[in-house]
Image (cartoon, rainbow, N blue to C red; front, side, top):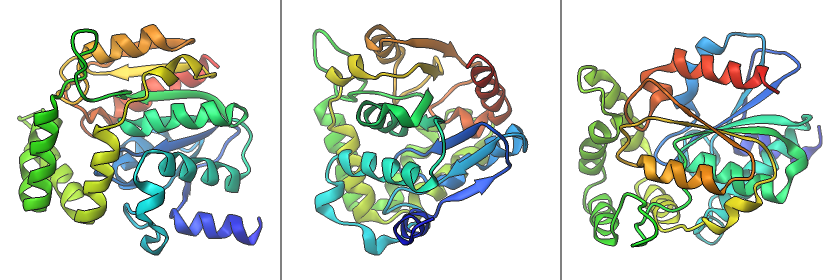
Length: 271
């Protein structure tokens, strides 16, 4: 491994679990870091090589490597993912991406299809803003504006407000508390910029260019990504299979990790 590769491994705090012929790369979404995947990793077992990492500005990544210019759009995060995959030097990987992490995976595969065997996307969206009358993204411009204003006014208030709404599973309040801690522990300024890059993006046109098979995992009750968005993605990806999970909320990998791990294994067996 070259010195540059080692720097990228360190920069993005790349971690490896298990071993096997199949390499699975777990890609976190906005407001989280790689720790969010630990429950799923515990259920995947040790027969696969599982890779986790933090986008720059998240988790235990090297914050000195963060720049506003690079990460003002999702392009910087796509570059992070591609550089991590190149540093690993793996044959084609299965990428499991949550939320905007799934979208980042789509964009990365368009650039470098040879790196990917397939993408398993959990609750992704190409555009979170409504675009009436043709597209229902789930949020109005006013919704996003209020969310960003709350983040800027009081980061901890925002974390406490949003976590239980997006988690659902009110009968298990410890899940929302864990997610709240993840939100609250992020750098307020970087988190807000990541939110802007996420919630103001529009990558609907790129969907038709995704060159690898996609398994689209979703929950029926998801306030971040309504089922209309899932149907839109499925209609516009060239090779897509939609799989509805028996779970609620935007974070099934936290609330139902065994089911998510089992579904990942089923997807692996198909390829």
